[in-house]
Image (tube, rainbow, N blue to C red; front, side, top):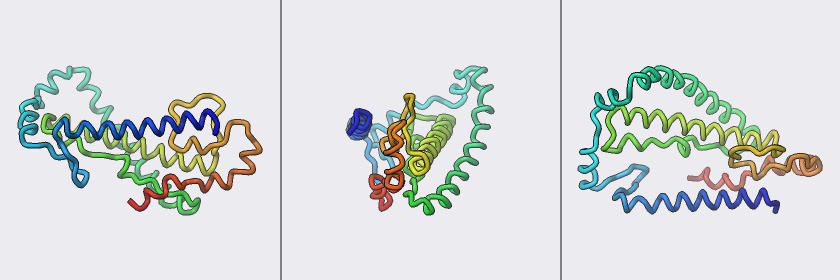
Length: 199
């Protein structure tokens, strides 16, 4: 195993550790997750509702220049919807041909912040927008990563920030022999994501 592979494995382990640590927060903040829905106890919900900032005050406190940027922010939704549809269609048509496991969109787009009692209507809409936008970007990145693993699994000579989930499968930059002898095997190396298809 190369030093790069070792570092990538440690990053994976740290990401798992981070997910586990984030789960320990649930009891401290007195919420639970059942069937992908977040539930707060009544006392916490009541306290959180007292912290809602009225939407008018929220807009007023944002300032005139911030309000002027709103049309620009929301205009980005149109290309994002087109990208979402295009990537879904691409994956539906191409992945079965290539033998690549599907990327589950729902694992990347999580809508739960709109349930927070301390957010006003505008904040809830904003949070939903950001969850969709960033979720789609993560989803697109994973579809692209799996496609890149199939078509061009070669690491870059220069550092990439950040590397995607499939990068560890790629051949070292300049290792022509490994690429030519191992390409067909790497194109099929998706065992680490196949078990998730049964979820």
